[in-house]
Image (cartoon, rainbow, N blue to C red; front, side, top):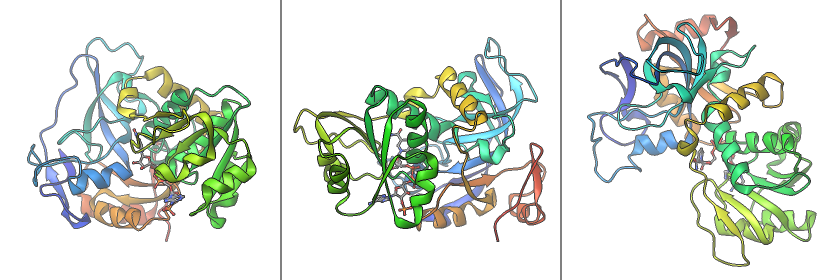
Length: 340
Ligand SMILES: NC(=O)c1ccc[n+]([C@@H]2O[C@H](COP(=O)([O-])OP(=O)(O)OC[C@H]3O[C@@H](n4cnc5c(N)ncnc54)[C@H](OP(=O)(O)O)[C@@H]3O)[C@@H](O)[C@H]2O)c1
């Protein structure tokens, strides 16, 4: 079974094709043939070893990746979610060692896997599970009632974009930051008010809402610099674990999406919202899995809108997938073509 991982932490060039033993689906688990896996900020941390104390992966190789789409090849005993062999599904991966999304065969808890939204390709569907659940958890933690005002930073990003869309579904008024070039995108996602991103963004939110916003989802990691946008006693969700400054009674929450990884009903609600057109599945570009290093380089350069998706495929060497992509190929019945 092939995967893309690092035997030594470092730059994108450390990503290489590795052989790993395949596993069967144990009780409560399903096994997938992975067709698509997204590139997320945490994958960079996995690659560089930011999560580890030592210089080399403990398990011989670390495989990055937190979300996948694919086809079910095996269903373990006691699975009661209704999933069956042959189903096209998407799932969230709680990564550890060789257990990451950049592999062609993966075993996941059945409760981490739901059907691909009707009408979506595998490539599109792969962008939803982890980032959608993160956005959902962010809103759950903020616990704002309909009509309240939520500010979102990094609104053009994957998490920020889903937060904006889910907040509108929840009946919130949404203020979002955006670069000029992203303003139309962020408005299309549903933001009621858009302020320019940058150094004075907290003041700009305040100018729009002089009493301060009721809640803030900080997907751009602005941390202390953004807190003045929020009213006294307001709610803050920091996506990268900023604990707050202990001032003005702000309630600071820190989403950890792995704690939602088996929230099947929530994941399935995301599928439904995507089918209803209330969540957009944004793909920036696709790369054959063998070109994961290139995808990482591009992601780290910033400015990617929508997710970069690695395409995995059986019965072809990773390095040979470019030709499939160049010709355009079908995943789940829809044609995907790599942008020039
Ligand atoms: N806690 C959890 O469980 C969890 C789960 C998932 C993600 N996360 C974290 O959530 C954060 C967002 O993830 P993501 O996948 O949405 O990343 P993303 O797609 O790269 O989006 C981040 C967005 O923030 C923008 N940005 C960067 N610096 C900014 C600044 N100073 N002001 C305004 N906008 C800025 C980026 O723009 P540019 O591209 O132009 O830089 C990008 O549009 C990451 O830190 C990620 O690690 C946490």
